[in-house]
Image 1 (tube, rainbow, N blue to C red):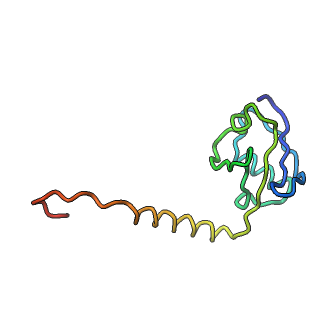
Image 2 (tube, rainbow, N blue to C red; image 1 turned 45 degrees about the horizontal axis):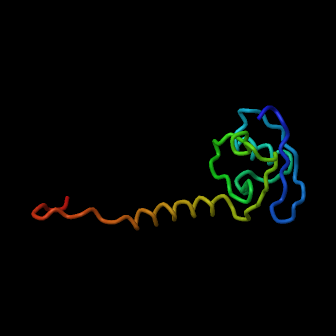
Image 3 (cartoon, rainbow, N blue to C red; image 1 turned 90 degrees about the vertical axis):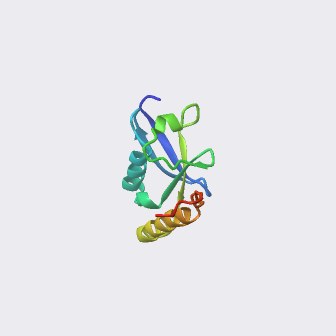
Length: 112
């Protein structure tokens, strides 16, 4: 995708939020920063969707994500503080660690 303009719409209402110029090397994080500067929506509260699916990889190129699609992104704003988001991430990591299956015990060998 050569230099073009991506339209960012509210996912639920369909209202146009802004239009962002992108180049072939523009990442999803770059797009979030542009939305933040144009629409005053903090990047950490943005969830960007393409065809109804969240694009979570910040380093993904916008051109690759939109390949073969209309240059349109849907935006959902999440209303929580950055500290809440960080806490939720830590809780998720701890929960995943606690759900790991214990390593099998070898008969006759004491655990360290």
